[in-house]
Each structure stands twice: as C-alpha cells, then as structure tokens.
Length: 137
Image: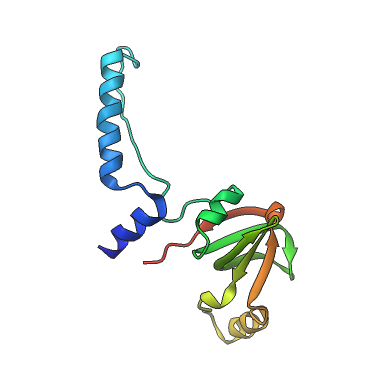
C-alpha cells in the first residue's frame, strides 16, 4: 500500500486513471475510425517513480524528493550528483547530500567522505544536463 501511495503522490495518476483513459480513448478511436481498417494497441502510462525533471516547475513540484542528476560542467569537481532537493530559486537548485547513504569499498568510502564534506551543493539549472527522481519505497 505504501508503494501505491507514493506513486499517487508523485505522479497524481493512478493505475485506475490510466485504465479508465485507455478505455474511454479507445472507444473514441473506434467510433471515429481514427485508425481505419487497422488493428492497434493503445498503451497508457504515467511518468513513473523515476520521472525526469526538465523544467524549473518540475524541480519546485518535487522539492523534498531525492534526485540524481548529471551536469554539463563539473561542480566542485563532480558531474554526477545525488541528494535531496531542498531549494529551488534564482535559476539554481540546492541538493542536500546527507540524505544519501554512501556505499563502496574502503577506497570508495574515503573518496565519498571527501566528496560529502560539503553537504549542501548548489547547482545552476542551466548546467543540469539530465535529472530524475530517485524512488523511495
């Protein structure tokens, strides 16, 4: 139930919503003969738990969520970031890196400890190459 609740909160679209739309729209396609003489398969889905973030509004909507992103240019020597989205504004976003758990071997742990010395990282939205939510179940 918790996973279902998370999905509904993040996307606002339930499985039942997709099913209902598919049935209703399929009926319109059939009645209007929009796919003349052809068989078709209609698939309807929501963006999912790991949806992509593209616009400033997306970042604002999902403030408080875990995200992972890649930048065009390095920020503090790194292009790959993961953390909790804590602030959005003035063309920047702020990630709280203390929200993630570091994993790895001893060598990796030392590197992660050094990288996490700055718990908050500010990144310009114009520098974000790609970003997406990290599912929390």
